[in-house]
Length: 74
Image 1 (cartoon, rainbow, N blue to C red):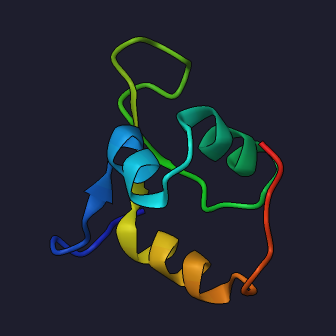
Image 2 (image 1 turned 120 degrees about the vertical axis):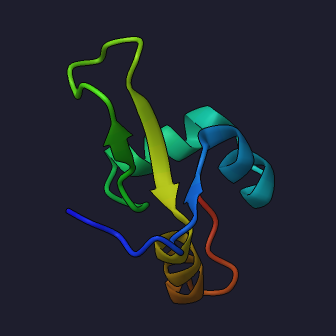
């Protein structure tokens, strides 16, 4: 999968701060298929040298689709 060079990839810390939720909440949403899946950079076997990044535009689209007033449980 390739992305245009102008696509911003977000780290979990930046995403957590932007959405004002914990990192564990983001990972819970991903595991429940309630949130865009990250791109895994490096080996996808859980190795320490791999890193997760989210495509900012996918997160923005997810936010636009969220109904107002819907809350997730942490």
